[in-house]
Amino acid sequence: MSFLKKNVLSYKYRRKLPVLHDYKIIKIDFMEEAVKDLNFRGNGKLLLSGEYFILDGGVGLAVPVRLGQRMSVIQGEEAGLHWQSLTLRGETWFEARFELPTLEIQSTTDDQAAEILQKMMRYARSKDLDFMRGETQLKITTRLEFPRNWGFGSSSTLVYMVAKWAKLNPFELLDKTFGGSGYDLICAEVETPIFFQKQEKQRAYQPTTFGMHPESGEPLPFLKNLYLVHLNKKQNSREGIERYRAWDDEEKKLECLQQISVLSQRFQFASSLPELNAVIREHEDIVSSSLKLRMAKDLYFSDFWGEVKSLGAWGGDFVLVTSQRTPQSTKTYFREKGFKVCLKYLDTVI
Image (cartoon, rainbow, N blue to C red):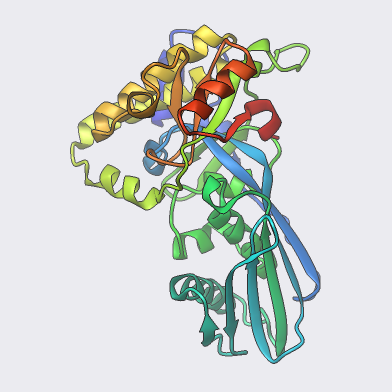
């Protein structure tokens, strides 16, 4: 019996919770057009619960966001493959040229980024010899719909779109490049919150809801009290992952993993702000004590009246905050602390 099903059976609320055999395995419908004049898009993501433990089979709750990334593949004007990545404002932040068909790097503004792209495209061709076959001039342009330092998924949406282009399983491409759980690849495709679990041989997810009235389907009042505050820096998730991997108390890790999985379910079932606040406090305590990381509230907002929860890698990107005060009062608090980006949750997620 999986730990998820075991937890579900012992969970004191006895509500109807997702069990493993109900999860849908990710399947992406690929386009059949020729490898040129194509357009792709992937949603951004937020991991509301389950950070770090999601890597080892913990159940996480994630939501897709309205902003994402786009990619076009068209016939180029010069020999070879020209890759250009644009910011939200249309400014070039990365550029590279590759020789075709070898995909050797001819020039680039970022060696590491160019090598990752080269690795992705070469892997795609190793899986399908027809990928880019006969192409001599290609222009690929990506454009973000959010600022680069927001951490909404510039890497995950890239993997998702390249996989769509190459007609690959996106998880294969992820495992060969950036690594990670893969929940963000599902968020790139879907338009609903999801429960996610990385299993031994596959990833599984189940569409769900968060903060919705069970009968009317309308947002519950407390969602208006949720905000997303940017910590003014982008966090490298690999650093936190390395700290998590270095934790060698497997028995304690499994115990915390099971607790986090149940908290993901309680997070989804929260029907009021006090209930959600209690889940946030418990979730933050477990991750903080397990990985010896200071909570964002203690670091930056110790005098804040609501709760603060890190999303994804701790130390950067966005935090989820709860506030019963007016939007103006809430945003003024963070602005005076030096954190100017304070988004309404309902305006951000799909």
